[in-house]
Image (tube, rainbow, N blue to C red; front, side):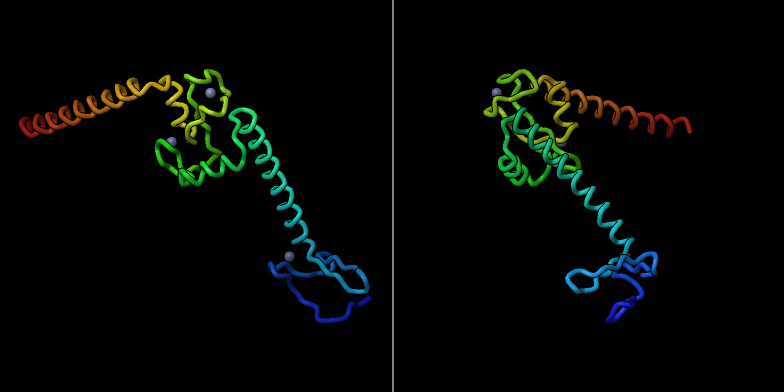
Length: 166
Ligand SMILES: [Zn+2]
Ligand SMILES: [Zn+2]
Ligand SMILES: [Zn+2]
């Protein structure tokens, strides 16, 4: 049965509205026409969006259970930090780590009062490995700088050495 009205040859996304690609039915006396390709895309997006919502739900549960951090407080912290790591200031590409003072709560969980900033995985790992010790982290920085200077003076003397022999 031919449906009344203007019939487009392509959908808004540019798929050809061939007989095989068109889903037609009448609803409340009106003709409804859908592009099957677009329906497929839509259901795929729906499943992906639902997956993201699930992930977000579980992250919220984890933040709540482990750090006593509500989604609102978490979002406030994100805004405060400009959605970037509190140590290296690089914008988060993955879900941030929640850092807490291990001298208050030594385990993975926090009482909620000792939550500090949101960190990227790298900075959070480094702080943990360095036992949260400012003294140790400063020593590490001094060490790297010392060897940087040694390297510069070595390469400088190499250049002089080459110039003399050449
Ligand atoms: Zn389409
Ligand atoms: Zn970082
Ligand atoms: Zn605590």
